[in-house]
Image 1 (cartoon, rainbow, N blue to C red):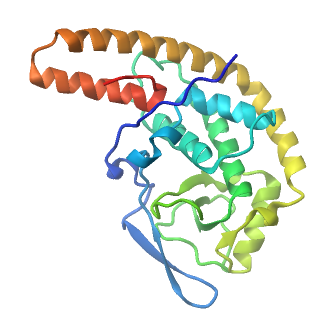
Image 2 (cartoon, rainbow, N blue to C red; image 1 turned 180 degrees about the vertical axis):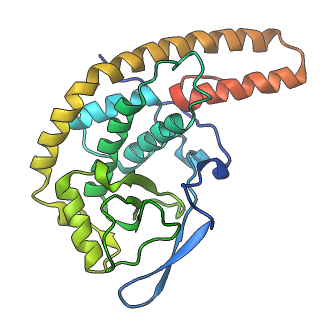
Length: 269
């Protein structure tokens, strides 16, 4: 089966809808090993800007892209990996907006896909990271006690937007990747690079393959059925839009079409 085409644009959302749990400041400071203050943006935008349109990934494209990465048919591309994570994050967060198209959406399966993409991002690109405990509203100071059940925010170095970061519970990382982050953290380091993870790839791949094989069938079926339902809904909305003369209703239809496009692509508005 061929992977779906990437879509050409993405709906913009209010950044406040993606504030991480417990966040109270748009920016927070954290001390590095030299006592210097480094400001980290704490708000998350699950959006794609105009200059990133062609790197955007629909939900089904994100799944097939991961399959290609796992099968070594492609090599990781920073923006494809990041935009795949963004799309999955947006859908996981939007439980009420899924409607009939994704009524049987399996959160746990897609969360596993997101976790694997996150670890591909972490181990293939340089970047900064910060660690939070489960309850803390501020980052834990590097060099202090490690939060075994905390969360990591990872800021890829090559991302052009300084407010773009990707979050994951530390418990969702492989044991090897967790150990490398813990070592860097306890040494009061705030950054990692691919070389830090050298030698762990084989173990990570075996672990990931074993876990993902159990969810491939679920995700593939949901990707296919979701795309079919989305196309059906899209066709109905486009037909209504052509007939509709009410300005307010036309705006509502366009919003629905943009939301479909943000998850499934292939919508012309």
